Length: 81
Image 1: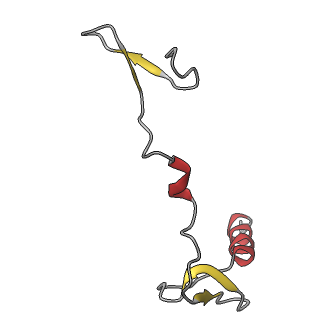
Image 2 (image 1 turned 135 degrees about the vertical axis):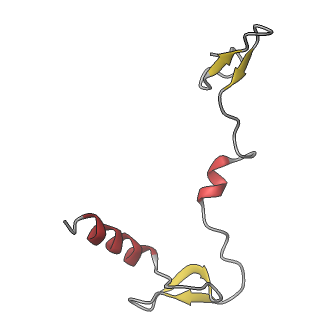
């Protein structure tokens, strides 16, 4: 492992003997790709099951679900058989 960052796995470069990281992060904050965009000022889409506002903009295509209904739907799909 690299002495600069002990949590990152490295691989030796056979040509130079130096170590290089296996994977580079996607950007300055890889977790940012997993978080929804900030709410902003525009209107929010309503959940198609309960009508609560979601974190999605009103112009989002498809069936938008609030976090509670999305969690319940995932549980139903996982336990369906």
